[in-house]
Structure formats: structure tokens, C-alpha cells
Image (cartoon, rainbow, N blue to C red; front, side):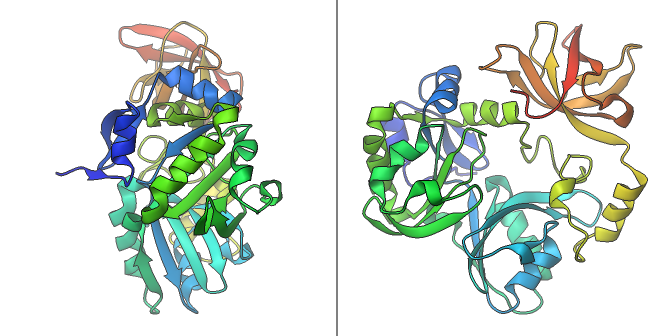
Length: 360
């Protein structure tokens, strides 16, 4: 299969990025080191090119009812200029994808989906689109830059007349940015470090990237790869589709009950509601390693008696804490904060402790 390239592929290669295949795209995994890039975002500011993400526009009088039908959260609560985190439940109790819904105008919405699920999500929406909602897949014409970190506002403010402090968490504005029209500036992100996501038409991507890099010089802005994106989201306990949530994990098991609203009917809502009422049997937890070692996806989680009680779904060495951290599903009885668990790392059994999220 031929790898797709983001609009700024050549720029990343010139910057010396190590490029790797990710979700069908040739993507920058790191420019310097994961640790250096991670700490740049936590302490200052960094820019990610995440243009591999998918964007769908849904328009028409039935757009909201289609979104309500397929997503777990209540999109009727959205006002123009607001975004919402939600998921697409499947018919078997699992999750098709997690996504963002942007209310662009009355009867017009943008859905932002995971790169690996663009085709799958499109087909899923099409299946339920029985009332003629106009759907457009604009993924291949949009670039997306995430400018993340405590100094993101300072780095970007000179590029727009919009007061960035006025853009509250999970809201957005559409306006001129870096001399470019119709840019979506959204106070969202996947790092827990604050900042903005900038959606721009591919034709202006190079201009906007260069302007951000130049404007952020004083804050020592750095380009950041997917390696640090993963360690940053893991410290926060944010789910990654394909690792921590998938077609077999329910929103309640994954700790996503807060985006699952029974004020409306949606795919599989009765079964999920029943699961909520009866209680789940397993739960996604965050944990810190007490013994030295790095947990990895697929490693067994055990109890004191050596019985397998679950599996690690994501794990890494936290650049901030300098210890192993992870997420994994465990039997409900072991999910309470401060519970001791054990991770089977190769031929060793290492001690860990369940922690409330975020892990930092």
C-alpha cells in the first residue's frame, strides 16, 4: 500500500524528522528526542503536524439528528463555536471511533476523526444517513497543526486579531490567521498542556506553519513528533483508539461514561444503559510502576496470587516522572486507586500501583 503524505511532508524531512508509517501516512515520529520534545510541550510550546486526522462536513436540516443518532454525547447542547468530545458506539457494545464534533453554524457540523478510521467512520455515517444529510469528506484538503504548551497563546497571538485568551476550552473561532482566511482556531488538544489546534486549507499550510515557527521563536517553539504526542497523552490518561479503546471496549469500561448521555436514543443505547446500571466487569485504569521497568501494550496484568486480571493497553517511560506508566483493563475489583497490581514484563513480574488519572 502506498503511504499517503501530508501537505508538509518535505518540510518535515528538511527539518530532519524521522519519518514512519502511521495510520497509512508517512508521519514525523521525532525531530530531536522524544524526551526533549515532550518537555518542550510541558514547559514551553511545540507544534505538531497532525494533518493525517480526518475531517467530515455534515450539513442540512437533518445533520444534528444524524449526529445524535450515531454519537454517544448530546450534540443538541452545542452552540455555534463550541466543540464536543464524543464517540461512535457500535452495535455490539464497543466503539467505532472517538471523535470531535464542531458546530460550525446552524445545520452545519464538522466531525474530526482518527486517521486510521477515516474510511470506516465514513461508511458508518453513510449507513445511518437515511435523511439526505449532505456529507463531504474534506480530509485530503485540510491540514491540522496542534500548537500545545503553556506558552502557546504568547507564541500565536501576533498572528491573529482574535484575542486568544477569549477562546475557552472546547470552543473555537473561524477567522484570519497568519494572513490566511477561514482558519479554524480551536482550544482543543491531546496533551493536557493547553494550546490550540489550527485547521487550514492545504494550499496555505506551508505559509501558516512557517508563520507559527517564526512567531514562536521567542518562546523557543519546537516541531514535535508523534512519539512525544503519545507520551504526553499517556501522562494525562487520554485514550488512543486501537490501543485503549476499540470495537470491543465499551465507553463505560473505558471511563467514558461522561460522554455517554441517555437523554436521547443512539446506537446500542439500551444495552449500554443496562451495562451502566448493572455495573461493569472490567475497567480501564492508569498505573505507575513501582519496580523499574517499562510496561508495553499486550503485557499481562496480574494480582498478588499471580492470576491474570487484565492487560496493558498503552505503556511508556514518562519523561516527566522518569518511571514507567501505563493504561490497562483490569477486573473491576482491582480498579480502585492505590491498588497494587503486577505487570509481566518479559520474564519478570514487576510491581505497580493503580492511580487516578491524570498520572502527572
